[in-house]
Amino acid sequence: MEIEVRTFCLLLYDAGCRISEGLNVRVMDIDFEAEAVIFETLKKRKKKVYRQVPLSASFFGFPQSRS
Image: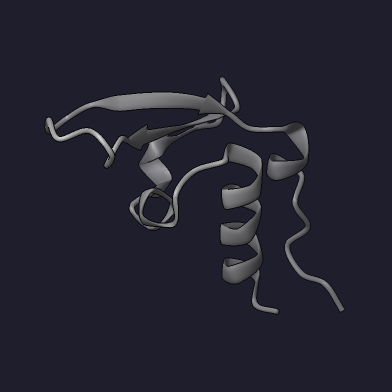
């Protein structure tokens, strides 16, 4: 499986986000110091509602490639 697909699946599992929220995540939405990701909540009807979700240490220690 490609690294992008594996990382996306791990994001969905670890953060418990919706697929549409995960697809909207950009690198700038990940807070590496706080080990968290910031989602724009798509369920709310209002625009610009954000939530910060912590990620496990295993998310950031994900191997670059797997044979």
